[in-house]
Figure 1 (cartoon, rainbow, N blue to C red):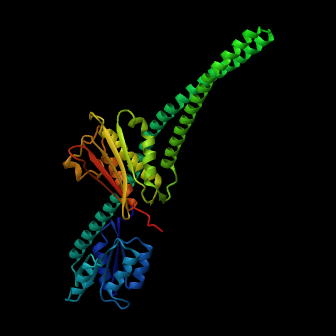
Figure 2: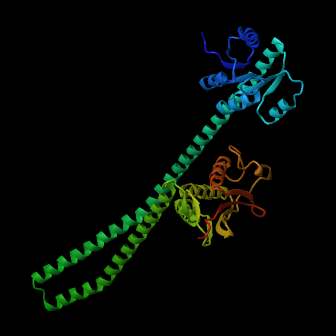
Figure 3: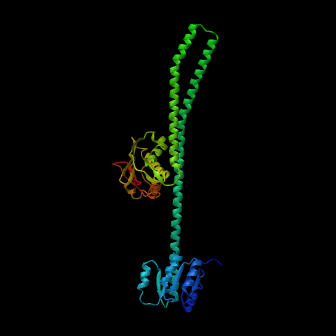
Length: 405
């Protein structure tokens, strides 16, 4: 025998009324009927079984029907509640419906068919409500998975950028090391030649010429070594900056005081392989108050906004991007503006909804902006987009600053 789909609890201190309810629903195979002659026993039943619908008489010795249903709501908040009343004054019941305590009320004496219809409608309402909640939870889970997949995609793009940056920094490092090897080899060979010359006891004038040649070569050798060392130091600094950028992107996710300028610097470093191709980047970073946030998430937002801006300016003759930070009162502001293809007014209202397609660049932005907006709002901030002049787009992020102590 299959498990019933619904559980119905009927409460009445009159055994005849309970027997009538049993006869009405005994043929309904998808409904399990639970009956109780007292509110106390009915509450015990509700705590044991996952009740979908409760029908109770208003007039009972231990407590009123409304008092009982209020207790039921505490135990089974999702169960629908129906009140049976013989009183012609229904104002109390109507007030309970308006306050969300009751699904509806039924006047006594009730007809079996009316009761059956009422129960079926109530159970269908309950089923639809449960399905709605299930879909909402499923959508929430899917959206969270989507955010995670977008984060992983961003990490994939980040990895490609890191590989390019590593190659860009390491190549000159390797070349300079090779140069140093050559120059050091020259020194070693010159020393060996000098040693051989002395051993063969060259004439004094030949020894003097060897000394002069060595002295002439020394400045060139020192310059080559200094230049190579400087190049090695520069490449090392670039690698260190790249490491800081990666660290800021993948650090722990606890909220802490954070300088939004650091997110900008990290994002610029991680995207530098794309920015230096031909895009003119202008940074106008003010000294701003700290914000309390999860630094890696804010860095992800800045990285996404900058990446979108780079996409948007791919087809313009003189691509330009401006990144600006500022603050006013208790608000820290970040702005990313580009002179790309612009913001379609018809899309502006839907821009931050998932899967919205735009004409802002060669790649879709809708999902990324939706996730960015969610991240910013989870930190108590706002993210807005607007047209920037006759063409181009300006994205503005505002976050609450930490109050000065």
